[in-house]
Image (tube, rainbow over all chains, first blue to last red; front, side, top):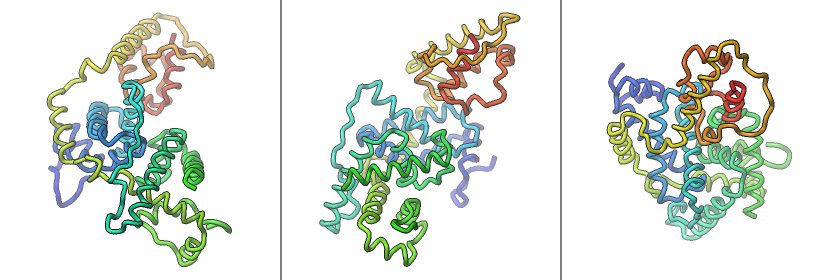
Length: 182
Length: 164
């Protein structure tokens, strides 16, 4: 196994293989690579910002402990997101946590434009509220597509559905979210 | 683009900068409030929960995860109350299927859940439970047609019911 090189980023399967061979730096690189996107995804699913750190850590820990379950058929990222979504679901069910949707500053894209800022804040608030009113699969597909930029093939491997079904879920999600935001 | 609106699948790639609107698409967007709403929606989704603001510091998370992996090299007993129950259930099932001459039942099409402990497990965890079954029992199940990791939880539960 070649040592990690900053000049040539290793693909995820290579890093996974390196970690399985005992290279903890490979695990750290996988975390650095995917933690931000995973946190944003969990936030979009409804996790409070204050829970994200714990959820992301737990997701990675669980993923590394269950690496034998990853066969490389789905991307590591989509497999990781699936674990994260399942953890998030259990997190609220087992802890009896309430979903809180504060208007959070980080949803504001541009502070140099007060009008745009207000509009973006309102849009972000409505979006978070709307997402929670969607069926879970629609919410997940919408986020994986619109927020994470996944193709339908990757989405279906993350969610265990078909590309056609993922496309339908996305379009239904968009339609319903637009209705909520009018 | 159809006759009335832009193709919904175009919004995400353009919002991410991976593609650009064509002239016709841009012109349509200018005059269509419905498509502008979708554009704002997808743009808002793209900006939702920016990592620098929601407290995710990848370097810090990486350090914490590595520390924890080093500290807990084996599966902790804690969170696995349901896990332990499931493993026990799997062991009992293994004994059942090891009884000579016993044929697996035909698919019953039941809707009730026999092993509720399995509800909380991911397919990977379920697979790990099933790996506790001795090889001889595993062969008796004839499950090699589909890798267990690809089965849904209901499918795995159905298979376990068949084993009883």
